[in-house]
Image 1 (tube, rainbow, N blue to C red):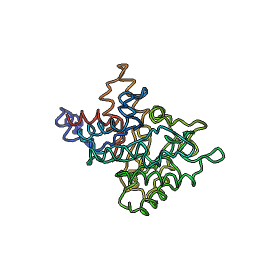
Image 2 (image 1 turned 90 degrees about the horizontal axis):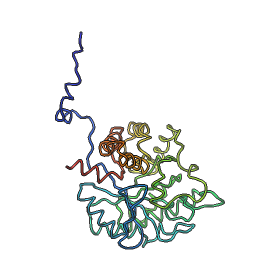
Image 3 (image 1 turned 180 degrees about the vertical axis):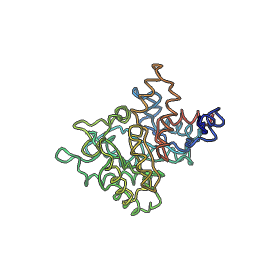
Image 4 (image 1 turned 30 degrees about the vertical axis):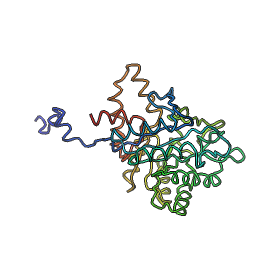
Amino acid sequence: MFPVHRYRRLRKNETIRRMVRETSISPDDFIHPLFVTFGKGVRKEISSMPGCYQESVDEIVKNAKEIHSLGIPSIILFGIPEHKDELGSGAYDENGVVQDAVKAVKDAVPDLYVITDVCMCEYTSHGHCGLIEKGVVDNDKTLKLLAMEALSHVRAGADMVAPSDMMDGRISAIRAALDGEGFANIPIMSYAVKYASAFYGPFREAAESTPQFGDRRSYQMDPANRREAAKEVALDIAEGADIVMVKPALSYLDIISDIKASYGVPLAAYNVSGEYSLVKAAGKMGWIDESRVMMEILLSIKRAGADLILTYFAKDAAKILVG
């Protein structure tokens, strides 16, 4: 007997497919990463990330206005300082590039939700995510600097801080610093699950943050580990994280699904630079339909369980979604 259930009935045309679709995405899901640098009138395209730029504060404001006009609710700022040093002092400089960008964006586009990346790697001369002692990153001494950086961002007007360094205890240190300065209502989005991934290559060009020696495998997670991700998330939630993140996204959809199923906090996923650049390169060569692949990737991240997606595709995807 031929099957009674013919699932093709609900695939007949786009209208019925849209009506029964299980997962949907919208511009509300996106956080757009931006790279702010020193100077004025600077808009330098990142060679490995077509369509992405290092931008001075005035150009960041223009970009922020466009992002807001597309219905994208949020940006996350990464800074490229004019000078770097061993202590990454530009990270917590009250007049640093990120701090200045936060002030300018909040003044020009007050309804745009501004998140700041809290890490040291863009600001240190050695390119690592913390203070170096005897050739290794000193976890505990780095915590004070991260707290200082987060406070400087919030004083400038940041709506949320997002520590990405993977130092143990940094959520607790930042939460205590914020609360102690009267910023108890500022949320923390933790890069709780950040793998030591080869997909970060283009970002390191964009943020000028390539380590000058060694690598980051002593503090970022081993890509082979699944159960460890749950431990990291549990610790960060206990320390006060309001949102947790999995990074990268596309190669770690199983981790996104695991975390979504186990924890009752909002979950972000970072569609990282290498994932973006692969699509851009293949699209340029004509090997794929770039727009369709972009949307399929974003849908897969949402389907896996992400509530928020940090993605360089945000503007392109929003233009498709809003027509």
